[in-house]
Image (cartoon, rainbow, N blue to C red; front, top):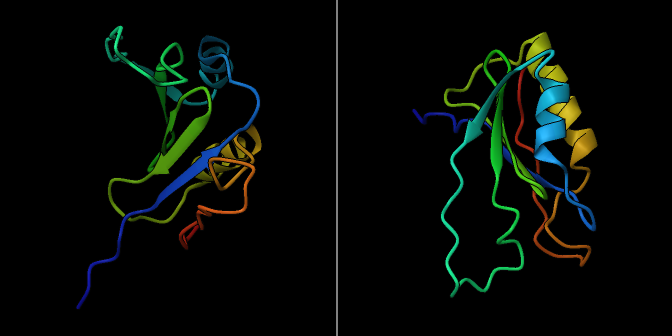
Length: 117
């Protein structure tokens, strides 16, 4: 007997970054918002996104989303059917982060796992 993998799905937006403060205010009306600590910046960092390391966690009933400027990670700690509120969070994240791969180039596709409602 195999244990089902928890729901885990990564989405991206290209060319523009989301303002996390504004996004948190908009989503706070319907979901629980947690601001996660930012990693310290070092001078030797070579990342293009070192000024965009902020992350917020958005929680529905069983589904959570970790949102940064360019990437969203949807996940469930334990596999469970999605509630109406979970589906609302999923649909919101898919609208905000419309792409299933990190670049416009045709590689590194991500498929959404199956889920129940």
